[in-house]
Amino acid sequence: MTLMEVIGSVLIIAGSFFGVVGAIGLLRFPDFYTRIHAAGVTDSLCAILVLGGLMFLSSSWLIAVKLLMVLFFLLFTTPTASYALARSALKEGFNPPVKSPGREG
Image 1 (cartoon, helix red, strand yellow):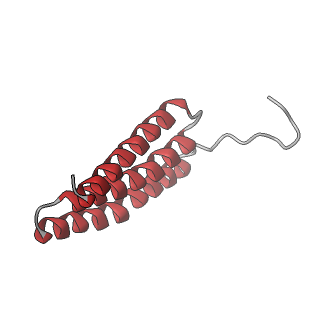
Image 2 (cartoon, helix red, strand yellow; image 1 turned 90 degrees about the vertical axis):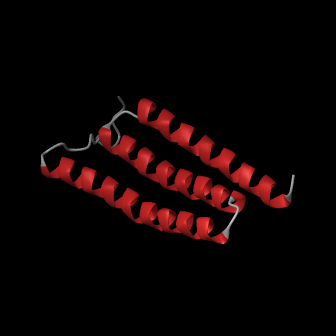
């Protein structure tokens, strides 16, 4: 195994780990806004790591450039989609739960 293959494999495994953590966050977090945050952040990190790993494993520079273009597209669309979902939910009156300071429960 070459160094490029090791780096690519480690990045893909790390990206897969963050994808699973984001999926667990979607299941475990209590409300819509924290779930959307978990999905948006981990999805971006997952895409960076997996596509970066695939760039290291690609056989030609043309494939790596295409993967880089996909990565830039995802880095712009994922946060924008998360923001649009949260904003439309807020506009429709779906307010985030807020606890009063100093009160438990």
